[in-house]
Image 1 (tube, rainbow, N blue to C red):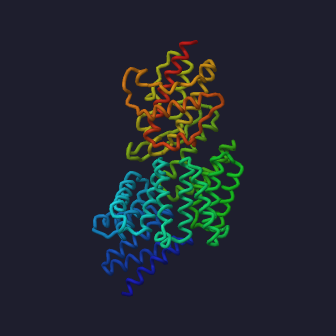
Image 2: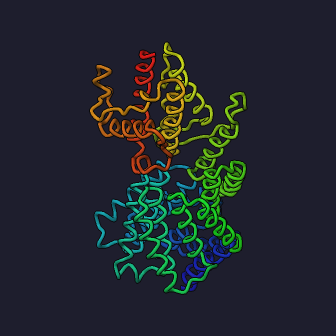
Amino acid sequence: MWKLVAALTRLHLAHAYSLVGRVDDALATIGDAMIFGFDLSDYRIIAQTVVAAEPIVTIHGHRDTAEVLLGYLDQFTTMELDHDLQLPVLLAQVNILRMLGQPENASAVCARALDIIRTDQANVPAKLQVKAFTTASLLARDRGNPAQALGHALAVVGLQQQPITAAQLTSLARILNLHAAADAAVTAGRLDITQTLLTQARDLISNNGFDETSIASVDHVTIQARLSAAVGQLDQARGGFEQAIAMLDGMGSGYLPRLPAVLVGLADVLHDQGDLPAAIARVEQALAIDREIYTIDHPETAHERIRLQLWTQEADQGNRTHPTAPTITVVGEHIGRIPLDVVQLLRNIQTGLEQLATDRDARWRVADAASGDDLLAIFYDLAQGPTLIALTLQWIRQYLSANFDADRVTRPIPPSFDLSTVCGEDLGYDKAAQTLATELLNATLAVGAHIESDSPMLLANDPALLHQTWHIVVWMYGLLTAAHHRCL
């Protein structure tokens, strides 16, 4: 009996060590608990120990230990376990797979966990339901589906509004769940929802006595800064992000994994304010931290590297002889594992669009600029479809305005326009994608218009729709340039 008590006590001790940044002590304590579990031949103790170890190794970046834990978790998933143990095992497996840069495997395991909840919700503890939907929201965000990420996050908010669930969650947990949903709402372009959730979170912070040095306050300042940036209040957003960074700097190494997201938020604001060197420096700082935690293929790291490549191109100021930035390795269910040079891909597309506008005999095709796998990686696995579409629209406006009559360029495309009819064959594109492409082109070519990558028109749609939309935009641009050339 004493070994059982000792094992469970060590799990709590390991968690405490982790919170104060004593990672080696936390892992050593986990090891002690594992030994007791094996001595007792108690698979439940071993499973609980592995589950308790997961957040320590994923937050603090111990990849070798994570792979060992994954081996144990794979064995437990083949056992007949009750929900109280089966769901924690599955969710621990999801978090480790996510950390190791295996999003397709993580999504498959997460789907299994959600299926258990949907088919037997009455018998699944509310706290586990919250954890499952929180994990699903993170995965949806990673895979570029902001609407689905918001839906899962709002499911958590709905659960914790039920008295039986609220009683199982600490006030801090409920605040952080509200913040997570507010963050997802910003990304999905639902700023009205963001403000409502922040108000609820602020009331909880005030009513429960959290001071300005708490993580609840840090998160609140960060999400408020994101909201300010989304509505164009850049000075206010910059001040908020800088305040959050200062708060995190004073909270110890245990909170270091939270810093990169705030640094990237500040970098985006600095970029929008035109301070490109400072923006690049902040992203490099974030990348240095995240590379100690995640694999190079992880979405957190990939997004930072994409920013560096895009902004390196911008800093290049059009000098196409500048060496390209290193390629990134992308791993995804659609493409397998491929190297991808984002800057070169963008240059290829920009060059092709320019050729269509300046050379009436140009016969440029998308395949000349990017392979199908490259585009799948951009839209699905890196979730950068909105960025590619926004850049493409920016170049389209630039080249049409520079080479053709302004009155013709700004003339709107009629809503009745059908690409398949014009081309004389069914191109296999959804009507919704063609409608969105027409709306984006008309908005772009209207006098004074400009589409940003965080436009609600782009963020509120899924990768498959955006992928088709981009292809249709390029098709329609080719038809427009051909028509304008004939009128010269």
